[in-house]
Image (cartoon, rainbow, N blue to C red; front, side, top):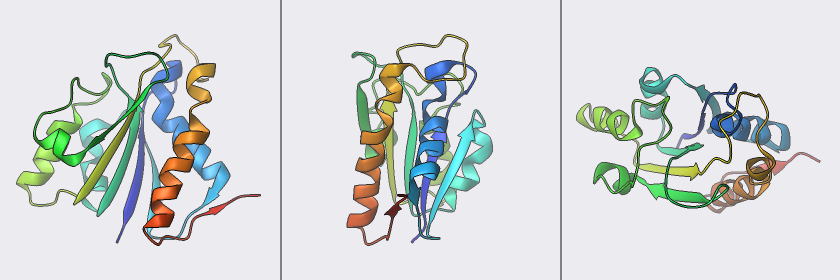
Length: 160
């Protein structure tokens, strides 16, 4: 079973790059088995549909525009996308994960499990660093995802 951890975002707009920073954090702090692929999706949107379609389990990480406080992280599952239960679209660089998953579903290639971890940004200012608020969220989100991978039988190791 192939698992994809997909980080989206624009590294030039501080917190907009949260998903990409998350992938970098995971690469620097954990070792993954070959069944797990970490992918920096940047701002490619629909151009990376094939990445999602080649996986059985997908974790998406991005910023979202939703009610709440900066630093709040919400989790959405595949049914939330497919049934239109997301309160808002993902960040502006995306065509919309709903559309990407719908296209994959029409092609009968939609992953069986999809989770989105969406963070509310504190800043979209020009800059390549995350705000302290979102930078502080990386370790906890990483532990959550690694915990789920480990619980599913995958051997993920923390780099000492």
